[in-house]
Image (spheres, rainbow, N blue to C red):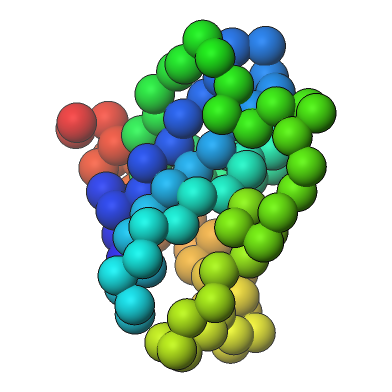
Length: 105
C-alpha cells in the first residue's frame, strides 16, 4: 500500500486529525486518529493531507475498537517491516527520491 492509498485529514487547532485507508487484506475501510507524530510520519512518507474545520475525533469522544485497532485475516505488520522501514529512513537516496516525488505533484 503506497502513500496514495492513505487519506490524511488534519483538523485546524491540532485535535481530531485522522487517517483512513482501505485494508488490502479484507477491503474494509479503516479510520484511525492521527497525533502529531503520526501526521509527521505519514507526510514524510508522501501522504497528502487535507484540512477540515470540524474534528472527526473529538477530545470527548471515547476510544472504541474501530479507532484503536483493525482486525483482519491478512498478514499483520511485523517487526521485520519496522526494521525494513528503519533502514529505508537511513537511506539518503531513498529519502531524496520520496521528496522528489512529493515535489513533483
